[in-house]
Image (cartoon, rainbow, N blue to C red; front, side, top):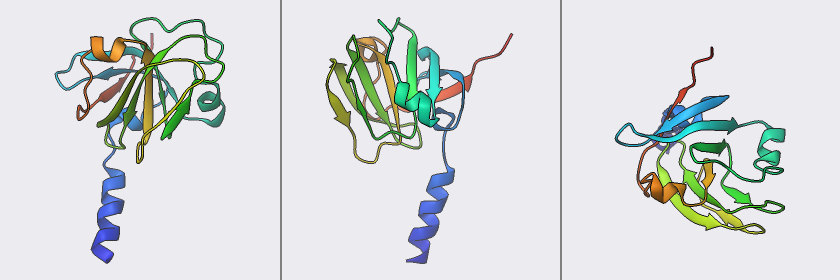
Length: 140
């Protein structure tokens, strides 16, 4: 039983940049190609609650990484999005494509959610089992 507890604690410390960075990041896929060039990290209560509300669209290359978040809703949103659920290690657990307004989506055991413009997950080649990494954008 003690070894299980130790493994769980060790697993918790093995977090990738995809789930530990702050600010605006670039998310890259398995081959190093960008999955999201301008990804805002929402890891505070207010930024997670606000999400994409109030926006009229989400341009290609932009996204929102919400953490922690095993579920999302699109109440009051004006446009559809792709929802990519990530584990603590940055592994893609589930993809919900083209989620319209007034919907909910969840993924058991997910730690973070990447929200992209509808169609971007497929266009960027994101698939279940992929591993996403993040690097902070350089400030001028």
